[in-house]
Image (cartoon, rainbow, N blue to C red; front, side):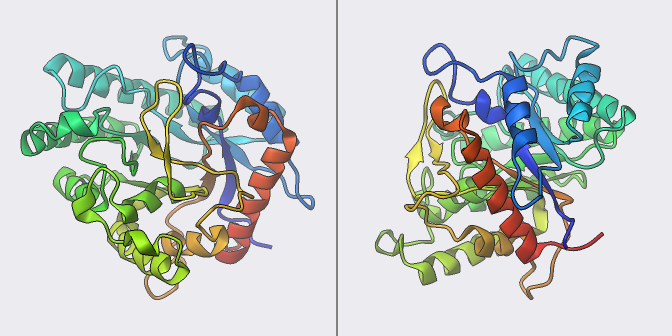
Length: 339
């Protein structure tokens, strides 16, 4: 049986779209317990990807990494990719804001290094975005992009000192990253060997529809439910961004956008079994995990399920996590390898 890529669950869905103006945050320990309890035909999750966000984590606590290592070890899990909490300082903001952005990347890389030393992290990246809205970026596209490039380069140099790679998240709510063409342009300008792209099957599918960048739309409105047209559009996007892809999220999407709490609207994450989902999860993952000739790229050592802004009743159901695990297994069976 294929044992690569490793199968991970994400913990940030317990935070994203939650809070005072929405439903309560789901405790980290609850998410970890449900992840560890999931099982499909004897297969379990190999690990978790984590958002280093309060109240789940306090990066100012020197014992925080040890606490996490102890928790995941108890369940025989590993930690993969980390989400850096960079939103207190926009990558295109003031000099002080951009310094804060880079400092948060540094703290996240330090945290990741501790996890490696503790023996619970063997692969994965540190995820970043521009921490800037599309409308703000559009006030000065060229000037703002230049600032984001500079900030990303500074963050990349910091990450390199820790042997870390940074993955820019492909999501339509981040300025200069909100279309596939803008994303390619940004990565080319940053031009750092340790900076790549994080593909999310839900978020990046919205690239084909031109949300927030109609001039870069590929999939015609009348073809949004046509499988042939969807596959052609996915091929265009993945051919452009696959060479940059160093982190991959499996997800489902129904072609709509959604936001809850204070989170801006972005690609809707559907449940793995949602009948309205437009993606064939196992098949369409192959556009990212195989090259244009159909050969496995093996560019990622693990894949992660990402599903944000579900109701707490959905996320607190163990069946939800079993369904997610089943979807990940189907991807590994179709595009995995033995190692």
